[in-house]
Structures are given as C-alpha cells and as structure tokens.
Image (cartoon, rainbow, N blue to C red; front, side, top):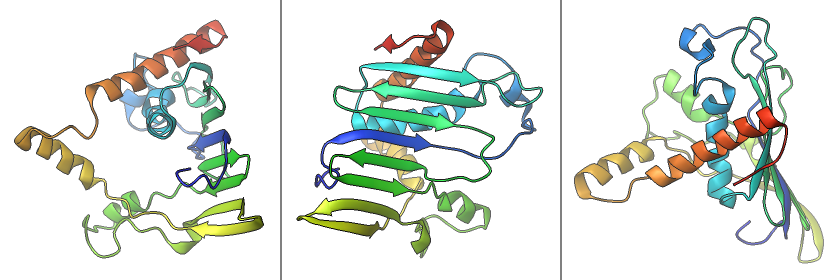
Length: 212
C-alpha cells in the first residue's frame, strides 16, 4: 500500500476462520454476558488490524449469528466497514474446514493475498523463547502473493512477512511505565475498537448501517 503497488484500494478482507463446532471448555467464553462471544474475542483483533491499516471508518454494518448447537454467544460475524473510497470486510466462522486466505486486498492495479499464519503461538507451545534464532519467522510457503501490473507488466511476486515478536508489546508497556514513553496501545485506540464493536452490535440488532 505504501508504494502504491495495488493502486487505489477498492476492497480488503480480513478473515479468521476455523473449524471448531463444539463448545469451549472455558465456561466463561460460553456465557451470554456483556463482552463475551466471537465479536469481542476474535473480532476485536480484526477490527484493531483494520483501524491500524485504514483508520476509523465512516460507518459499519454487521451480521452476527449463533450457529453451534447449544451455543448462546456469537460464533459467526460478517462486518462491513465503510470508508470514502473503499470497503473492508471482517469475517469469522467456526464452520470452515478448508481455510483460505486471512488477508485479501484488491486495488485498481492488482491484488494481494496472504494466509493467516500463527507461527509464534506454535513456537511458544514448543517451548521456544521469543527473540531466539528463527523465532517468529514464517516458512516460505506462507508468503503473501502480490499480483499486479508494475511498470506496464503483469507480475506475480512472493512477498515475505516480517518476523513477528509479541514481546515488543510488553516491552513497550514496561518502557511506558518506567520511562514515561508512549504506550504501545493507547486508551483512545482501545476505546475506538470498543466503539466499533458496539456499533456492530447495534447494527445487527437494528438491521441497518450505523454511522460512526
């Protein structure tokens, strides 16, 4: 996006899909109380990503549903964010056996697609230490794909992902407390995520687009 490889952005999709039809063993995740369910659990991350990439939308529309047998909290969401010149879709379902891309961007010059790899969580479960050699680096088969017209020619280019490091967030919190640095996530940023979530809940209830 920074070097305009896609041209003018038309639409973006951020998905977090899995196949997990059973109820969670963590009882608190299945109780129908405020701030419980897929929109708050996973949706908060997708909304946060969209806000960091694209800024605050003008309006939202949301379709929320409960599909798992015996479930009482939202386990499916399809959220549309409206911007001046493009649209962003945030989606999650627990009934997706064949997961496709986690990130898809379409512009006037081309498209970018990327799987949702989570190599850090798997590495931590194996006992690897953050910051160690190879930590947070995705395998080559998880690279993104940029298919676009560049300098007048059609190109399909593999795009490597920067190494991830969750610990940078916690280091930032320590630095803010001890050295009066800016928090890695401010209260205003967190509040904006909640504002979007609450607008989604209102949109689903009223079946209409909600302006922000």
